[in-house]
Length: 117
Image 1 (tube, helix red, strand yellow):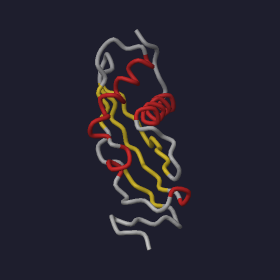
Image 2: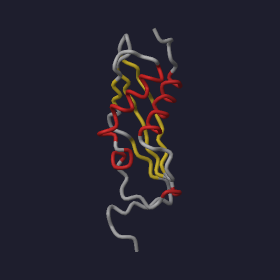
Image 3: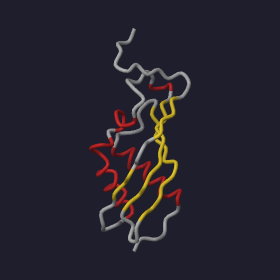
């Protein structure tokens, strides 16, 4: 049975899994796990509250939608599997991101599909 994990350790595991699965870091994008809730005994689900930061280093961006830049729809199973392996769990692990917050930092431009000009 895996040892008890701290909130900080869960946040670190989620951030590493997202970085690996979503090909981060990329210029101007910073994914931050704000809070992770472990659910189940044995653990079978993580409920994650997170923020995607848009930084000037990668500006302009097409939009401010986390799903567009991270592709969670098709990748969430891979994120759960990545964390499951890191924790050496035998059972499936579901990761629920819910609504990912967005923080657009000063100096970032969002083009929303408009041509550069």
